[in-house]
Length: 603
Image (cartoon, rainbow, N blue to C red; front, side, top):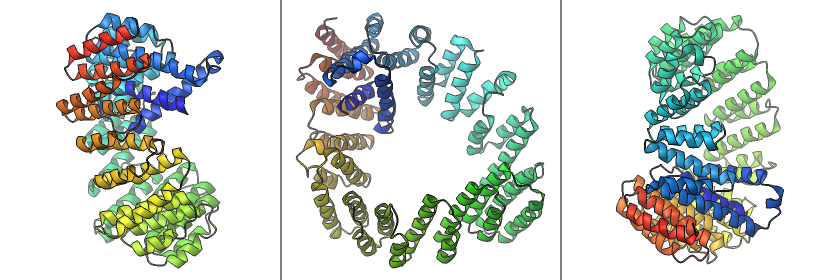
């Protein structure tokens, strides 16, 4: 676990350039954890036989070389940067460095050199190339990404599809359509046009959807997208136009799907008579439909939508027509849920008796219990879940929901029924949060104190850290910084709150709260962790166009890094700081730092 955390830390420093938005540290963790799995699964057995210290040294050494390579490129020393890159021994940290170098070279307009690097070192790794495309597209640099496509081989289907997928993933549907339109015969069999049409649908661009339909050779595909146009118009409230499109649908099943949703939309818009008219048309089509997989899927989705709109009789009629037992069970689950939300509790519970999957039946009953508790019938709710395997979790959900509805006495009463300490901590914390948010400032501290007393009594540091993050972060969301700080100062043991502190400082940085973030950074015990937090604080500040503050954060990090004793650790962190300073226009200072790193590593 210690090595995993180190690998994640080193990986995160590679994965996010300074001008790249950091939505959440979780994304970097997810990527680096996968890289760590690759690292351990592919490392030679002799390497795995070494002790943890040796593995740590390997990661720090290769990480330092990678970080230095990136810093040198950023200050303009390209040749030395590539020499250092070639000396990285670990293939996975080399891949990370390669990805960052290629991305930076591409941004600088050196696309040919970037491609030479890719072709030399990636050995046909399309995953790496796809990552480059995605990064460029997220940066609104689609022209540069397309330049890569053209230089590599604009007729290579695999490369084109990678670019198309990156464009679609980042909502650049116009660019994607332009490429497809010019290469219809090559790409249509390989691309999910329906997925792209959905993107245009979200933009309300029905004309572009119709244009896509015209290039399709397959009748089934044309009908599929015609239905999509009808559904898009329905969602936009253009119901008369939607009905005109429905007339072009040849499949009775497609018509049933469209008419059901159009009818619901009419009712939602206060035109109940028109809605019922479309339901009547739907009912007349049902005898034409045979039971099969496609019909089952449409009936399931439509029945769920009808139940959400409280059209329960028609929803149940459609569920009766579903032949697949699994889909029928799932449909009944959704109908029972919406019946519970509509406070038709007896009818909802009756439906759950026909849900023949025990886990799903429990979930359905649990949701009804939550609705019962909201409606004031806590005794019946408790009776329903008495024998549940996840009883504590269900009680937590009920209590939290009641607190959100400002039914605090009922929420606290439910919390008393919880037996597991961790669930009780999370429940009381959620209630305290709602009390604070609703202005109940006398009661809120008392419930927080109960929460923290239970937390104090936990013994496992990793669990305490995990739970503390779940307790503290919601208070940041309501800008209750003093309360969050007070809770974090509760434990003198840094191990109980290492990850929480890091998450808190990142969250505050994203919110533009530098003063508060620096206050929390002071609580981080580990100097290396503290430097990492300061670097990511700088990333966020630069992303918010607050360059002077970003430089101040890096200056603080530089001061701490100068005190480190282990040369590989010091080299990696100094190089990372140098890279960020160069990106902020401090190239001379960055060069001085890289010169120091080169001496440190005797290169």
